[in-house]
Image (cartoon, rainbow, N blue to C red; front, side, top):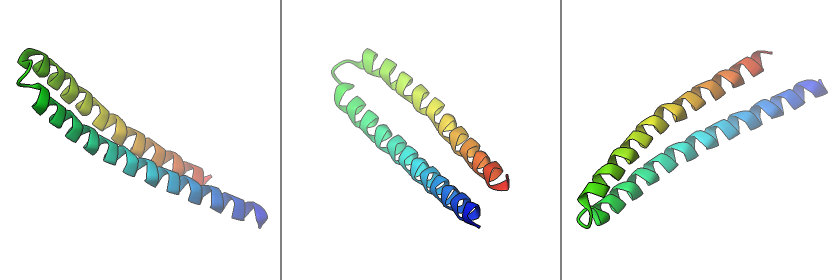
Length: 86
């Protein structure tokens, strides 16, 4: 009985952590995108070549981060499901 309560508490904590992390991850990606575009808009006129390169790097990084974020969400969800099952 006591073991069952502890397991339920751990599962609840894991679910809460997973939800919070996913929200933070999405919020961070959105705010980073805004800052990046704002910064490029301000800096662009001063140095177009450099801005173009940084924009490419920023887009490439954002593109790579998206799938990693989703992959992490998916794998943490699977781990949670497996852990619950055991």
